[in-house]
Image (tube, rainbow, N blue to C red; front, side, top):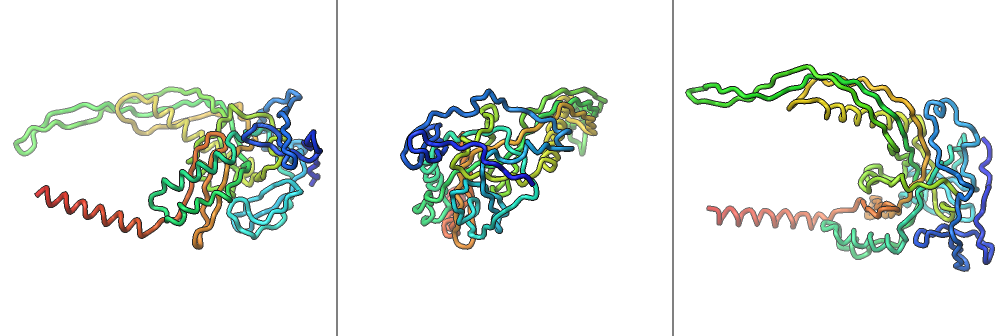
Length: 358
């Protein structure tokens, strides 16, 4: 395995220390003297490239691997997430679940480096306020949780995604059903009965799938990621180490092959749904779709999230915030006392309504 070289440092022009990317100021800020450096990243005219999927699945060149900067890797023995951070930082707990069981991680092969990155837009102060508001709106959460708000452990990190493009041409056939009605007599009564007239139907579909997102993280709950909405890939910028300077980055654990298979399943489902919408009539059956995919490309990208992992009782909970849009989703413990009181109140209300209804 080739070593990941430290190709670029972002030194503070005032004191020489390493500057970190600040989401609130959208600039590199020195954590020691506070000097703000204007962001002039990827100024060499670098563009975001789409890579041929079929070619990549056969062979990824070594120059497309690594991180272009020195990084230390550790793996959590609890949730199995692999975190990468600046070598000067000492990791004590997992960034994703809070477990202290972390060990150094050495990959058998250098990872494919990111093609592009979506920089943070929300500052830490904005996120903390959102988390407090989110806690206050959880009616069935224990009061202790709402009071604590646990915002001290919120931190930002970049999680890996794959994006896939493909052009699909599909031919479909189906039986289209058209409703009609007949009047019949049953038991001396006249009834209007719905029936279906079936006719053969066929058609074609041409569609371009652009940036179908597939998360490559194991450290963040996939269901929570879906709830915080999509990440605006039209705001991606070419990968530059300056954007991730000072931030923890998760290494992808869903590899390109598995991600490509998942993306194809998603595309096939969407293609079938679009063909189904083309079938005329009131109902349908026996839909058959023959799809051909071409111009298949991919990118490896990093997207920003703010993550809060906390323990309550014997369980670990996560709250995540989309680092661009601010959409929030999370899990939290329930107060069974509050739930029991709510059920009791509903039963009382139903009894009162039933009494006055009589």
